[in-house]
Each structure stands twice: as C-alpha cells, then as structure tokens.
Image (tube, rainbow, N blue to C red; front, side, top):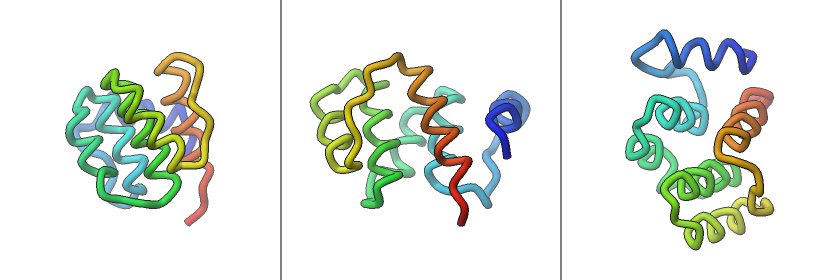
Length: 99
C-alpha cells in the first residue's frame, strides 16, 4: 500500500484494516484524532517500531521528556521536523516493511 492509499483510507473509513500492523493502526487512529486509542495500541509493546510510534505520540501530546525516552528505546534520534512530517515519515517506513 502506498502513502496515498493509506491516507485515502483514513479519510474514507471508520476503522483501520485488521490485517495492518499495530503500528500502522496506531498512526491511523492518531490521524483520526483518537490519541488515546493510538497510544493504547503501542503502549505495552517493546519492539523498535512501536517505540518509535510511541515517541511520536508523546510529541503529539507535548510530553517531550517522555518522547525522548521512547526515541532512545527506538534507537532513533529525536525528530526535529514538525509532527506532520514525522507522521508521514513513520507511515512511509511502516508501509514499506514486509511481514
């Protein structure tokens, strides 16, 4: 799936596809404005991709200390661009992963 297809789905559908990774589902809910659902999906996961999404979500929340903790867990540098740019980069990265 492309980023264009993913964002079109966000605009058209009420639920993410159940076959998507939990990280993509989390970004989907974030884009829909449901930060809590997005956060709950990755909150207890320990893999690097989940930690990266978790860091982004804490940036959205404005909790930079917590975001930095999760960037460290994800082994990623703190993102310096705006939230929209980070969401897009995360989505592209997750969409390009093969199961």
